[in-house]
Structure formats: structure tokens, C-alpha cells
Amino acid sequence: MITKEFIEQAPKSDLHVHLDGSLRVPTLIEICRDENIQLPSYTEEGLYQTVYKDQYDSLEEYLVGFQYTVEAMQNPENLERIAYEFALDNQNEGVRYVEVRFAPQLHINSRMDLEKVMVSVNNGLALAADEFNKRQAVLNGEEPRFVYGIIACALRSFGRMSEYFNIFLDAHPFSNQKRNFGLASYELVQGVVEVRDRLGIPIVGFDLAGPEYGFPADDHWKAFHFAQKNFLHKTVHAGEAYGPESIFQAITDLYAERIGHGYYLFDASRITNPEIKDKKRYIQNLSQYIADKRITIEVCLTSNLQTNPAIKDIGEHQFRKMKEARLSTTFCTDNRLMSKTSVTREISMAVDNFAISSKELKDHIIYGFKRCFFPGAYTEKRPYVRSIIDYYERLEREHGLA
Image 1 (cartoon, one colour):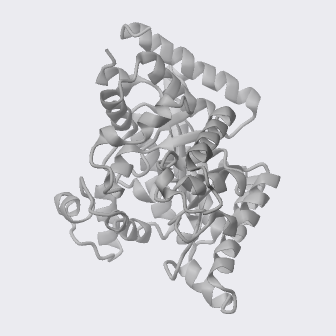
Image 2 (cartoon, helix red, strand yellow; image 1 turned 135 degrees about the horizontal axis):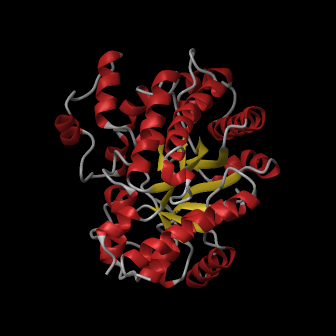
């Protein structure tokens, strides 16, 4: 029996979680009050009723809440505080490794350039990590360290949605949209690589987020090629709202080492390319390639249920097919606030609904550590993962799961 207590105590990772989707509601309310930012309500209960709900009617409704969180993240002090609290919330539920992602270009303004944005977020995370890792149990080697990495998100498309993007669009009036989207991604990746190398900030990955349909991955090939040449890991949102072809593009055009969501990997009805005659074989080849290469899928159960009205019940989630195909998967939150979730909750949902054995659970949890974009040398990562496995196995024995 895998108990809730065991899941809470087990060392966990979260490889797919958005900073701007994971604020504490009291913090959001306090910042918005102090800075005269309009909210639908200034009480927790009111916000949970109007914005941050248990269920949403569509992806569009789900995304509404980001306009308030992003607006609250427009100065260094707020970014540092939000990142610090984010790390604490993860530590408090047993998360020992986290890769937090966000789109820096949504926060660049007259007060903060890219460097200031990245430094502010890192300051908050580093402070929380330093406090945690000074605990006696960690120093004695009784518990594993807390480690974090930062992933910078480029956007498949954008409009006049931030001070930076407003200036960017004004500066390129003769470029078509597709060219502008690619240019912005390329500018971002050059910046984060430079900040990583010069300041030593643990920027471990580059991501592509936003609507898939009509905004193909190859618009951003140049940016991801630059990431590849500069040893920056790649993960891509793909297969969340579009089909297997989007996942294929992420892997082949953008060198993706992990896939965010990957929900429609097995859905032949979403293949639109007329040149693909045998859709079933195409999916078999694609899923086999993903399995062989151990391209890990970042599974976000609650988020998928909330943003995809086609999923009526958790039992219908495509994780079942991923499990049957023996793909490398790890459970993630996506957005702790918008989805009112935690890694503990995501794992508990999986255990309760997909007949996961204790052996399978261990594999899924350890995959998160093995497939992370660790901010250090491989010679450092190996003993860190070993410490996680040793700690996990000790808990298994204590809970009668060994």
C-alpha cells in the first residue's frame, strides 16, 4: 500500500512548473494592494471563486489568472520574494529538486533588463536553498540537498503583452509575425547564455511555450540551434493542444530532450499532414523513438484536466498509454496556483487512478532526478542522484514498501 504519508515524505522533483503560475495568493493580494494593481477580488476566497478555480471551461479561462500574476512580477523585489516563497513551498512538501521556468521577456521593463530579471529570481531561489541546505539533517547527510535550476521560456507567439514586447514590435515594423517570433526567441537565448556564463546563474534549460496550432516549432529553429551549440538543455511544450506532429517537430527541429505535456502523442486523429499515410505506424515509430532515446515526458495531470474539456475523467488521461509504452515520465505541477496542486497531489492522483506499483512509482520519481538538467558536472549529479535513491529506499523500508 502506497500511502499519502509516504508520498509526502518521499524526495520529489518538479521539472515542469511555471513561476508566474505558482504564486501564493496572499502574496499576490498584498503586492496588488501595495501597487494599485486591479484584482477581481482582494480576498483569497474571492479570487478562488472568480479566477483561480477548481475547474475551468477552457484553456483561455485558465490563462486569465496569469495577467494578474505577471503584473505583480514587474520589479526586482517582487521577483525575489516570489521566487523565495516558491522554493519554500516546494521544500515544505518534500521536493528536493526543482526546475522553475518563466518567460523573462514578460518582465523586462524600464526598471529591469534581462540580467536584473534573472538575478532577482536567482537571488530568491538561492536564499531558500542556502537556508535549507544548512539544516543539520542535510549537513549530516541524513537528508538530500535541495537543488534548483532555471529554465527560460521563449514564446511561440506574442502581441503587445509586456513593455518589452511593445518596444520589440515597434522596433521591427517591417518584419512579418513569424520572423518577429523567431527573432525574439533568438534574442532571448543569446541573453540567457551570456548571463549564465558571465554570472554563473544556474540557467539550465530553454523552453518554448504558447499555442501550438498555427505557430510551428521551426519558426524558432535558430534560437534552439544556438542553445544546442552553447550546451543549454532543451525542453518544449508540445502535444498539449496539438498532435503527434508537434512533438515530432520539437524533437527534430528544436533538439528537445524532454517534452512538456505530450498529451496527444498517441492520437492519430490529430495528424494533419497528408503525406503521412499510415498514421498508426507514424505514432508507433515516434513513440518508439521517444522510448529508445529516453526523452522524458513532463506529465501534468491536473493541468490537462482543467485546460482540456475533452478529458472527462482522470482515468481517460493518456498517461495510461505512456505507462503501457514504458516511456520515461515524471509527474509535474505545471502551475501550483492555477491548478491548486502540488507534486504530492499529482503523484497521489496517479497512484489512485493508474494502478501504479511501488516499483513503478520509484521509477517515475527517480526519472525526475535522472532526467533533470542538473546545474553542475555529471560527476556531481551522479552522487546527488545516488543520495536521492538511498534516501528513497530508506523511506521504502520504513513504510514497508521495500
